[in-house]
Length: 116
Image (tube, rainbow, N blue to C red; front, side):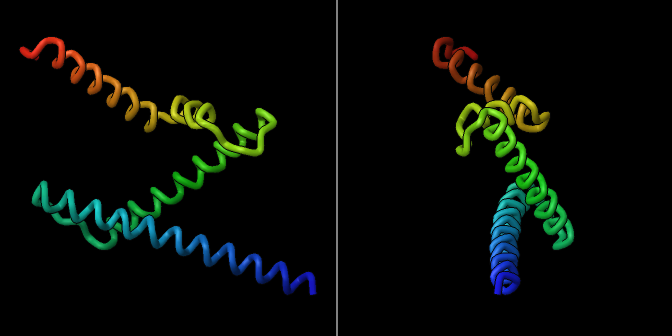
């Protein structure tokens, strides 16, 4: 009886994971279509699948890190401090946040000094 319950739970987790992967694949496909039309390039199905897989794995890694940060702080809920720590620790997220910050500074400067 217990083995059947564990098997059903495992199947449910697998099904949920597959649905998440499909959602990531769909979103990556939509983004690639958008970029393709803007930049007049093409993405192969294999390229879209590879980008989707890398994206999904990175999200899994981020989720594990966020859980560990919260657990280390003796919390069961992930909060914004955990996300900030993740962003600081991750080279790719840190680069994006620095770039975003620079763009925000340029925008603010252009409001104060229209000649920018």
